[in-house]
Length: 541
Image (cartoon, rainbow, N blue to C red; front, side, top):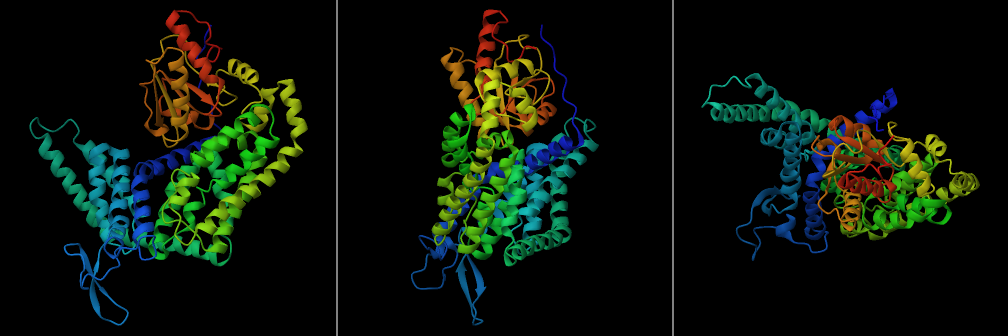
């Protein structure tokens, strides 16, 4: 007999966390699709500015266009030299990209989230007003004005939805968008630009104050726990990337790009599990190291911390060490390291910062390893006893999301935990065998990274089992709908996933890399194809 699990009742703390995650996902939705543009800007900056690897006055925007043999036809601007004389300087690529291209891309993405393609166009128009109304790059302004303009357009469209006479729809739609876009652009120029400029100045002053008082390492006290609670994209892309981009404009590099993206703390924790862990945690940690450190998917080490929450101390200590190292050496990146792979970190490292950046990664990994090793060593006997007794349910209840000591224990927990979200390797709702599974969606915060990895694992298992016709895709939680037959998400995100796809069946996993849930899904597909209910233990209650 199968039962339908009721959605869990959220306490105030969980409700607040879900709301923060949703807000973070909204910020991420504006930045993440445009990260290639940020990376391109970072690479161009690293190569062609006057202190870059291949200084080029035309591309870097620092050359005198009036000199003999100057490149003809390139855009220039009139600048005043220190002695009071003026000359024509090349505009280059770096300045226009950070001033116009990146904020407009952010605004367009935010507008599309709120009101589709129409919202994206109006958001872009409005954001140009705040760009030209300020003297600093308007990343923060784009993240405010873009969605706001799209929301205004959405409300205006709602006023006459269904009331336009046939034949006049295009006329009304075109002129209403033009009027709203123009009005919002003027309003942003005069009313919003000064406010956002002041806020940007305050944030910059705050970072400067932290640096002057040697307090920047304290950022890890906020950043590292937020990462483990799946707010990493909100912190990194929503806050640190815009602030870091402003610092690059002023100083040519920024350590803020490496606060959240530093792969060192996660590497240290996974190394500690590799040497001192127990059961499945120890056996899967080496593979997680490859994905986390070289692939840049930091989410893979979050379950290891959630399994033993005291390890957040190791992450904080490692993160603070990395920041302190960059402060001491004055090192930083010229663009965001996305994903947080060591390869991406080096690709964006400023020319004079390789020593500092390398030490920041190595020392943060060493410190997090030492702290994590002490914690794991102190609890090793208890962990071994728990693993031998197979009391995984009690361990999960005590640690919120225990990754599991053995596959057998996880499977038993999955079978017995239907209807209780987040209590083990798998949580399910819905009727297990009511309909064949044709579309499976893996959902994570950003719709990339960890969900793509999980989708690839399940897709390969289904193909090997002869069910290659089952479509397996990955999406951001914010983009979910009820079109899928099954949604698989990390335990911390399942509640949000249910809100976006309330009638779809959901499974929760603790780790996208390796979970018995995948084998159980394959068994379910096989059972539905054969018309039996065998092998659906993951979802039968």
